[in-house]
Image (cartoon, rainbow, N blue to C red; front, top):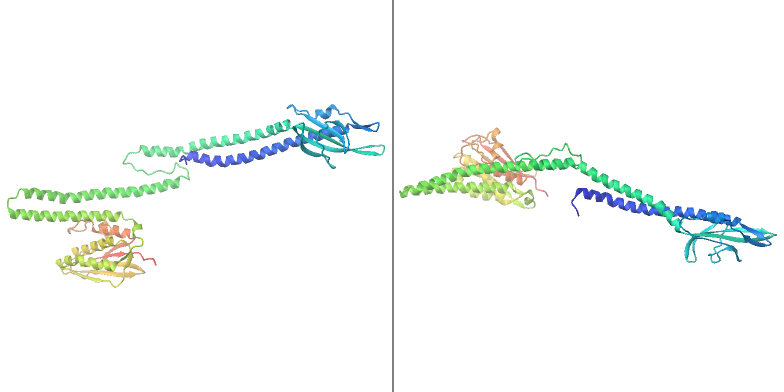
Amino acid sequence: MTNSLRLRLLLWLLLPMTVYVFAAGLIARDNAQRTASLLQDEALLSSARVMAGDIQWENGYLHAEISPSAIEILSSPYGDEVYFSIREVGGATIAGTSDFPLRVPGDTPLWYDAAVSGHPIRAVSLIRPMYDSGATKQVVVSVGRTLMQRDAAATELWRPQMLHFAGIVTIAVVLVCVGLTFELQPLMRLAKDMLARAPNASLRVHADPLRNELRPIVTAFNQCLDIIERKTAMQRRFIADAAHQLRTPLTLLGTQLQYARRQDDLGQLKETLLAMHRSNQSLVALTNQLLLLAQAEAADYADFEGAPVDLRAVATGTLEQLALLAQRRRVELSAHLDEPGQVMGNEPLLSVLLFNLLDNAIRYTPAGGHVALTLSSQDGRVVLTIADEGPGIGPELRDRVFEPFFRASGEEGSGLGLSIVREIARAHRAEVVLGDGDGDGAGGVGLTASVVFPAVRG
């Protein structure tokens, strides 16, 4: 099937019009034939009545002197043959063709189709009673003519109507083609304008020159463009930030390599290699964080439908992983996991979410501080809360800390942890809320990070 809009619209117009014209043509042809037959039948009846008037009694016998006017009524420019027959009912032929098919009518004239000498004719018969000296005889007057004039008249009546229908179809096709050409010009100009735009120019389309039927398409197109532009801007910023973040450890690692090559002292070389190892670990950690962020941003919401995850088990495993870090930093970990905590999602990503939140809480909590993990339920929704006793985050920075590579303090880190947390939460249709801590710790006001998951559908 063609993809041309112009041709498809023409087909939608032509197909029903063709069916209509075909049906109308059949009706017009039938009407034309009936009209031509009616005219011929009237002429036959007139001729038969004239002939009936020519019948007379002579010396006790019926005699018919057919006047030329009776034949003249049926004269035809197409060379039609005229046949007639006048005979007594049950008697001999008075005048005319003896092999004319006899049909005895009733009180009214009778029209019928017949054949004389192998020629098809249209005929009419009527009865004329003849009275003489107390005697009454029934005389049948029959007149017929071949069908050439009738068929020609039907064609002459039918042909103009078909030409009229063909003209209507032709005009409709021309008007549709011309109308579409004019109406599609704004769309063609729009396409040329978009192709002529500079690569960095905005691709938003102005719907004002377009017709109302095309404006919803343009609006939807602009919305898609907005999403693409936002995603592209995010990717460009992410690539620029990632390149900037990777440049520093790579440059440091290169410098350490050059320094190690110039070292002859084995002790200095070992210290340099140890520093290189730490730089490599930082680089690997940053790369892993970048990959996790990319995975979380690319997560499809549909991937999390129908995969139940037990947050209590995820929390227990994450606490075990970070227990040694908390012990080295002399931070007390506690957990209140009384709720079942079942959500729909992806268990590895949820483990990363909880790991990043707990890792940030431990790193920002001073020695002797406390980090508490709580799993609760509010109105059917599962809430995961991590409270620390660190310096906290001011209300004016709580939105910015979710941006990649943004750090609210000078604490060592990549600045990607909370960005990963936000993307994983979005993928799970959850909400991350930052708030003030209880202020009881020795290190500061503290911070509370809550992840509110949607209610699980029953």
